[in-house]
Image 1 (cartoon, rainbow, N blue to C red):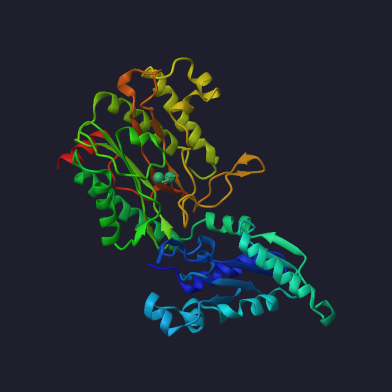
Image 2 (spheres, rainbow, N blue to C red):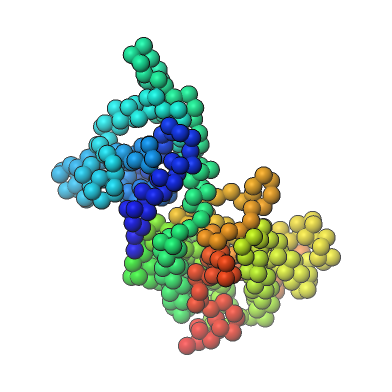
Amino acid sequence: MNISTQTYQARRTRLMASLPDNSVVVVRTGELASRNSDCDYEFRAHSSFFYLTGFPEPSAYALIHGEGDLTLITLPKDAEKEQWDGFRFGTEGAMMTFGAYDAAPLEQLDVLALAALDGADHVVYLFNDRLLREQIAAWCDAIATRARLGAVAPTRFMDLSPSIAEMRLRKDAEEIAIMEAAAQISVQAHKHAMRAVRPGMKEYQLEAELNYVFMKSGARQPAYNNIVASGRNACVLHYIKNDDTINDGDLVLIDAGAELGCYAADITRTFPANGKFSEPQAALYQVVLDAYYAGMEALTIGSPYEACHNAAVRVLTHGLVKHGLLNGEVHTLIENKAYRDFYMHNTGHWLGLDVHDCGAYKIAGESRLLEAGMVLTIEPGLYVSADNQSVDAKWRGIGIRIEDDVLIRAEGPYVLTHGLPKERHEIEAFMAQ
Ligand code: GLY
Ligand code: MN
Ligand code: MN
C-alpha cells in the first residue's frame, strides 16, 4: 500500500503554490544513527521529507523549486557499498521511481544547492534543522562572494514548518486508507495480546506477541516504542522498559501501534492479567470509558480541538469525586486542576506520519476547529500512584488508559481502530474465549 508518485508531485505543487513566488524549498531526510560499534538503527525517513518525496533512503536532500519540480540528491549507486548494506536507488531510480525532475549524487550537493539558491527570493526550510541551517548559511555566503560575477544571494528565509504542518494535518483518501490499514493491524495485535497474556509472564514476552502480529501482518515495525505496563507500571506514561513480571490481579496497559508506509497507529487498551477486573479496577475503568464516550461526542466538524479534552476531564473529575479519590465541587476541582494528580496528559493529539503529528492546536490563541480529514487520538486515562497516601489503599497503583484513532468526517467521528473490545464485559468475554 503506497502513495502514488502523482500524489507526491501534487503535494509539491500545492506547497509551492502556497509559498511566495521564486521560493526554493530545501529539506533533508537525515543520516543513519549508530546504535553501537558497527550497528546502526534501522533508518526511518524524516516525516516531512517523506511526505514530499516518498524517498526512503538516508542522507538524501530535496530541492523543490518552480511549480514543484524536485531535484533529489541521493547516495550514489556503489556496487561495493551495496554489497554490504543493500540496494540504493541512485540518481536514475530517483527520477524513474520517485518522479524527480533532476537528480544527482551527494557529492554534487553543494554545486546544485548553490545553483538553486542563486537568485532565489526566499529559502524555505525547517528552522529546527540546525545542520541544514548552517549548510544554507554557508551556501548563501558562498553565493554572496560571487556578487561581482552576477550572483545574488537570498536574503529572505522562511520556516517550512507551518506550511507543511497545515498540509500534513488534513489527510487525503490515500493516507486515510493506509492509516486504517495500520490501525487494523494494530487492532489484531492488541486482540492477540489480550488472549496471550498469562500471569507470570514478563511484560516483554507479551510485547513479543504484539511485534509478531505487526510483522506478520506487513508492518515492519511499531510506530513508537511499545508500552506494556503491568500493575503500577501503568502509571508511568511512557513506560518502555517492559521487563517486569505480570502478576495475577494486575491490570495490563498496552499502548502500541503499527507503522505502515511510515503512517502511525496509536492504540491503548487496559485489561486484567487474569481475565477478570477487580471491583476497584472496574470502577475506575468505567470512569475512563465514560470519559472516552463523552470526549467522542466532541469529535465533530466545527468543534474546538480542546472540547474533547474538556468533556473527558469533566467526566473523570466527576468519577474521582464519586469514588472518593477527590473531595469537593467538580467545577472547583476542574478550575484548580486537582484532577491533574490522576490525569496529567491531554485527551488526544494529531496522528499521521508521526505519532504525535504536526499541526497547530491553537490559531490566534484559540483552540482550532476540527475539519474533515483530520485524524487524532482520543485517550482519556486515570493513574493512581502506588505512593498516593491521600486515597484509599485499594485504588493505589491502578493505571488505566483507553485510546483509539479517529478520523473527523461529515457523518461524525470514524474510529479507524474499530473492532477492538473496550467495554469491560466485552474484554472479559473476549479473554475467556
Ligand atoms: N503512544 C503515545 C501516545 O499515546 O501519545
Ligand atoms: Mn496517543
Ligand atoms: Mn498511545
